[in-house]
Length: 354
Image (cartoon, rainbow, N blue to C red; front, top):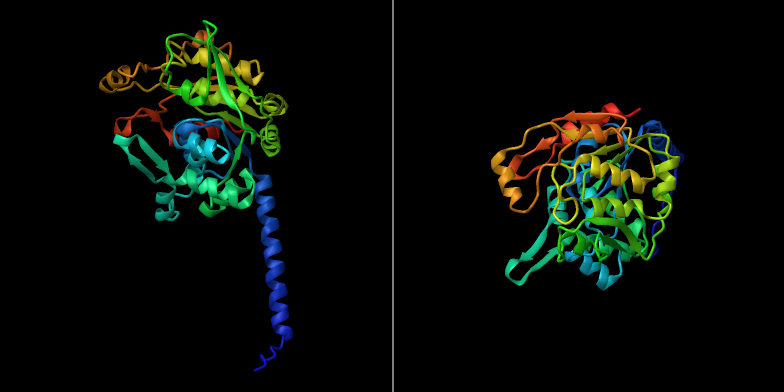
């Protein structure tokens, strides 16, 4: 039995050509639309960058999240060691932060799902496994991130600071060297000994696209986060300070709300700004955003049990590292957790866009 011959009429050909032209026009308009948008780059990881990104995605900006890629703890570290893929914990959070709230609830749920057996100290993140699988399927870590980002239709892009395999190291005041992000994040050593420097072992090179978006940013936002295990490691990547120094846009830091045992014991906002500007290679930030909202005493008592305390501002010293100090009620205590208010942060950052 021979297949029937399908005739291609002029009207069908015209319709196909029309669709192709319409798509080309749509793609060009989309490209022009994004090229005319103000470019915001948010640097960091954890819940801090999540809060910043979650608020900003509601505004018409071209947003790029730059993730730290040197995690070594829990499931992220296990996947990194076993499969040799890029650590994905912060990448996963940033994708979720930029995903539309009305996107498929089941897909978001799967990406956030974590299987845990507390007694066996067993915890696995399905989102980390999805990113690992995407990297293996595409054969490239950034292509894998972009594939998952498209799946979630995120409002912006997520990029790694580097695709090189490196570990975070810090040197303590007594000369002790602590290796590995997880060992710094949850110290097994005496956490009262101050950290004096941070570096990567081996050295890592900035990812090319990350260099370009950082250089071209209209607004560069250093999000709240762990000073020595999350933020500073990004800035010691070879080439990162070059991109920052070439950037002509505004450079803004969102201050942490609380200190962290083993990293910022006794630190003020000025101390953090001093460390960050040193590693960024800039004299000062254009602005530092600080919290002005009083925190609940009962909640602070719980945090004190973990040796975490409100971070003092110390304006006189902070002016050495900030062209402008913006004080606003950026704290949120919903659910008994002290975190940043994403809507208030986005409102303030909108005013910082040149």
